[in-house]
Structure formats: C-alpha cells, structure tokens
Amino acid sequence: MPNSHRKRTTAALAAALLGVVPRAGLAADSPGSAPAGPADGGAPVLVDERTVEKVLVIEATPAPAPMPEPWPYPERGLLVYPEGPGDGKDRWAVGGIWQIAPMFTANYRRGLGAGFSLDARLQTIILFNEIGVGAQWAAKAGPFSLGLMLHVDGFLGVLGKAVVATTQFDSTGWGVLVDPGVKAGLQVAKDAWLTLQVEAYLAVYQATDLGGLVISPEGSLYEGFGATLVVEHAVGKGVVYYGASLYNTRMNYPLWFNVDYSPQKIWYLGVQAGYEF
Image 1 (cartoon, rainbow, N blue to C red):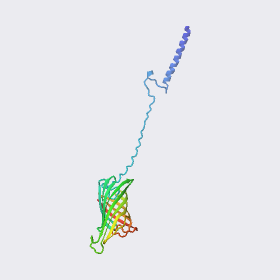
Image 2: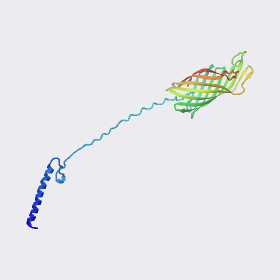
Image 3: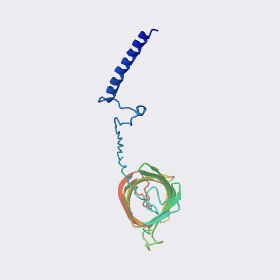
Image 4: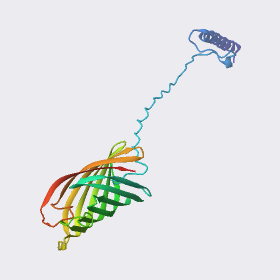
C-alpha cells in the first residue's frame, strides 16, 4: 500500500476515535444517565429504593355464646317422674289422696338401671286398704321422659265386727286389680318436674261378703281409667309433690262394698299431695 494512502487511513481512524470518546464521556456525565459501575472504576450508586410493607389483618372471631348448662336432675331421682330414682337409688314418700274418700298413702320406688325400676304403694283409711307392687320402664325422647308401667294391686275392706263393733252392718270386700299405664314427664324449671300419668283399672277378681251373702261378678271387669297430673318440686334433698286427677270409672269403684256391677261409668275428680325423702 502506498505510504500516502496509509497515512490517510490512519488519520481517518484517529479522527473517528477522537469524535466518539468525548461524546461517550459527555453521555456518562449527563443527568439521568446510569452511573458508572465498578467495571468503570467508580463506586456503586443507589439508584432507587422502595420499601414494600405487608400488613396482616387479623379479625377476631367472636366466641360462640356458651350453651346453658342443663338443669340438674336430683341425685336420688324422683318418685313419680318417668326417669325414676336412677340405678341403685330409691325414694320413699308419704302423703294423702282424695279419691271418693280421703286416704293416707305411702310409696317406694327403686331404680334398677337401663330405665327400669320397681315400686310398691299403699292406700288406706283403715276400713279400706289397697296395696300393690309394680314395675316401670322409661326412656328419653327429646326433652321428654316417657314411660310404661304395670301394677298389681290387692284390696281389702272391712266394716262390722272385725273393725267396728256393730250389729247392724257387717261387710267385707276383697279383690285383685291389674293397672297398666303410661307416663310422660318434662322438666319445667330448674327444680320442678311435671308428669302426666294415665292408668287403666282392670278387676281380675273381686267379691263382697254382705253378712254371709257373697256377691262376685262372673269374670274380669274393666273398671275405667284415671289421668293424673303431678308436679314434683325439689326442696333441698327432699321433694314436695302435688297433683290432681280425673277419673272415669264404674259407679262403685273403688268402693269395696261394691254390689252394683253396672257398666255405667261416672266422672269425678281427685287430689293428692305428699313429700318424698
């Protein structure tokens, strides 16, 4: 290559380099341009700093309203209420009932477990006495306690020389009654229970001796039924009970001097009250 041409090429390259380098320097120093990095020999420069804050919002879930505690059942249970005293526990009671005539009553009930219980009962006014034994079974159905019961009662009535010395009237009556029934109970307050009891009366045998003349029906008789509403109110460790009954029975039931076995039935009321311990 001729020397003149080589000189011209070298001068052109030098001029080109001289024109680029200043512009690059100016661009590096101009505002808004990126700072030189460590590769350029300069110190790092913070371009932008952004802080991102995350706020965690915790909403307190309101606690559910506490369920009311169930009303307690007496430790030794109840006498009339279908649920009864409970397994291995018992209740005694004394009181009175007005059914045709006022009578003294005594009752006993003992729990056997699994809803079963046994009981015994006595009604007396000396001239008329009725004693019976029975069994009951109960189960819960929602807020109710439902039960089935069956009693066998024997009665004896005496008027005349055996009890009262008279010469004008001497009579004795006796018989056996089978009384199936149902119960429905509900706790109506913290210390009060309500029980509806319906019981039928079937006389499988009865007889009346009027001065040597014995009168007896030929077979079993359906005597009628009674419906009783009883309130039991806990007072300390004891229980006060009271209630009213509606009866529909044969005219002479439960009079032991029954000589009229007419199928005609009558309605009448009864009341009862007592104390369980």
